[in-house]
Length: 384
Image 1 (cartoon, rainbow, N blue to C red):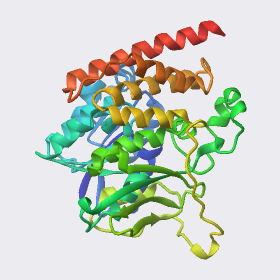
Image 2 (tube, rainbow, N blue to C red):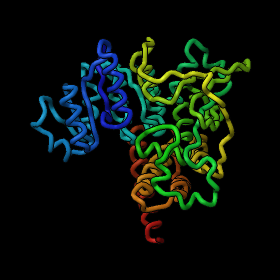
Image 3 (cartoon, one colour):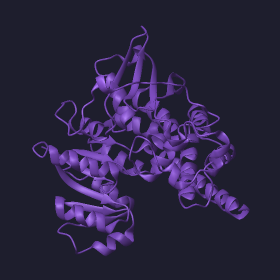
């Protein structure tokens, strides 16, 4: 029986994790849960799952719930860290879309726990810090469908014999939209992903293809493969989740119908495989599987992320922070869809990266980039 703490329990990944735990209650149990500020949603989960500890990112939400539950209620980064290091938690699921998730991730790894990672921003902002910690203690398994696919394809393989990694992307809702119409894209259109149902931030990142840029950086740290050997290919059907090409020309791929419960379960129960409550793939009913290169004129965020990966150091940190601010501004209807890459590029142009930064430097750069990006947002607003 493995104890599981879920950081981000009320989100899409968190709820699907709970679904997996429910289906494997003889192997998994809930230890602790967190939410951002959604008191109602977390309250329902607390009474259903009876965790030993809960936490809110928002201190006001935590204060509102104190005394309501049969367990302690914590708040802020310290609360998330305590959730991540709970002595009964064998596995910590990290599923909050922010670089702040780096703190509970590192804390869990230091305690020797398995981290099931869904938050791209952790490795994008602090990949070298995570890999340094992994050399000493802990275990890291990816939850992203693409990185889980790569991880599965590499089982039993010598990574030094890998020629390149191929990350697939659906292309999002604007794969074929005329370029001159992208400036008029609405929030509702950008959130209408053709394949996956995800949180708002990652859905917008999928529409700009920034998510694939983040995944390049994430894969670089997960598998020790340099960014110039990691490629993105558009695969609208979202059935082939990623591929590995080896030096002999052989290519391995992982296929399944798009359902995040499969990579979640693989991370929780690895190295064992068990039945998963998903629809099975029937290849006789799949009419076509198509692949095409991404158009970086259509998806400038992908080009920016590749550049950040090449520069390294704190440049991915600055890029990621700017993206978070720009995406939030777009969701708040303060800026346009194509203003997102413009803000990210401006932040990257201003930033002077530090190589091999410590955690304090990473956090300082993250804060600087957020502040500068916020200033840029206000300039865009003033122009309206």
